Amino acid sequence: MTTVPGDMILLQRRIQVARGLAPGDLLLVGGQIVNVFTQRIEPGNVVVADGYVAGVGPYDWTAAETVDVQGQFVLPGLIDAHMHLESTLLSPAELARVVVPLGTTAIVGDPHEIGNVLGVRGIEMLLAASQGLPLDVFFMAPSCVPATAWEHAGATLGPDDVDRLLQHDHVRGLAEVMDFPAVLGGQAPVLRKILTALARQAAVDGHAPGLNGRELIAYVAAGIRSDHESTTVAEARSKAALGMLVQVRDGSSARNLETLLPLIQEDVLGDWCLATDDIHPDDLLERGHINGLLQRVISAGVPAARAVRHASLVPARHYGLKDRGAVAPGYLADLVIMADWRQPIPARVIKQGITVAREGRFLAPGTAPPIPAENTVHLPALSDADFVYKPGSDVCPVIGITAGQIVTRRETREVRRQDGCWVFDPARDVMLVASIERHRATGHKGLGLVTGFGFQKHAAIGSSVAHDSHNLVIAGTNPRDMHACALAIAAQGGGWVVVVDGQVRAQLALPIAGLLATASATDVADQLANLRQVTRQLGCPLPDPFGMLSFLALPVIPELRITDRGLYDVLRQEFVTT
Image (cartoon, rainbow, N blue to C red; front, side):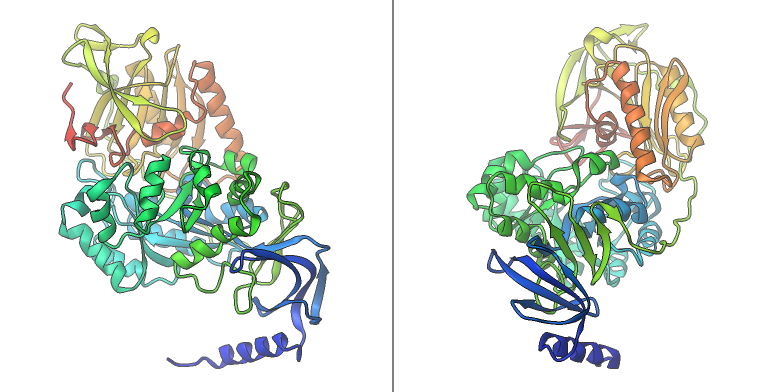
């Protein structure tokens, strides 16, 4: 290994600063240092040199800048261990403006959303747009693009593409292996991706909702070391017992922290960490990010130093980020200063020795490279007739949804038919749902029925965010509104739309791959609020109807889903005839 002269000089200076023979760049005095190794909080000072912590302890260092933190807690920057940046609907730069003042200094994302639309090119676009931010954006190489063989995505990522991505410094391993049936069946394509990551000693993340017994053991035996899909205490216990890192998820669409909190309180999960998976900007602005989850854990009686360890050092080690996750010599000076555990907004956030936020205000200078926008919504010629559904009988299989969860149920409902066609009846709470291929205008289309949206008036809602292939997904009460919804989404290059009586009543444009907005987080949150208000006026009781809509198309989570090839039963691994 060749030593870079500049690195040698910096290392020599750091040693000199630590010994007190040279001044540092920043000195924090009078702090309560959160030690994530010993899980203790002790008084001390922190001296920083060239973006790294040079020394920690009760010593009288000097520096160009000294800050008296007056007994406040000094902890390492927080890490979101698993999220989809695209689900925030924000560009990397705008996401940084929101989460850095909340104490997040790094995220680990799975970019399979943009990967399903634009392939490697889309992932490299996000990597380029993340450079120079006061937020380290790490990605995992998507394992399942497309997620399954029973729907059509915009791209395919094979083992060679995974290997290409893994060569990037900011790609830390193989993202959630969602196709667990392929793993259990020993199918070569997915196993080659796993072996590619393991050969590079990179992390391999899991996605195995409800898997148990010998099938779970076989899944873990493939080298998969984490999972964020635990929704029950028993599931989390079984995965932790097999050595999996339980990523406790709490975002906008799935919220599992309260369920798993007793295990955290009992300290029986071994290594666990916090993750948001899918979180929208309004929730970030209102509820916070990892800081909000950390506060809830500490408020539940978990010792603060232990809780901080699992929000920093544990995810850092899992992803091979050896230079962060602790307030310790030789670690990056990514530091958060908290006045009170009951107050989740940090007093100060420091990124590599530079203050980038104070009292919730973003202070980092500079701008990130722009992301090129292109309209990726390509539809064939459509008409109202494309949204006419003719079930085979009055009793039909229906997707049953549950607020706060992304799992669905397979239900059977009696529906109204007129001349053989399904007709909306508000008393029965059954709506039509459509998935339309939108990457190549192939005309592939699937139709089915869904219950749980609760509409009492004629309308339709639609989205170009439809996990994971991101075709159009539209739920509605009649063909005219559903057709108008599809056209409105295409006209703005993607996004979310509500149509009532043939007219667009609310919308949010997502022109970057049909997934990301160019607007600010505040503007996006305002538009989301308007979308939800309009859907509430239609009778919808769901707190996040568009999040729920987007997950109706995810055919790797039980039980019933809609794809552009039709209604699919995930448990039975077969299409459903109606």
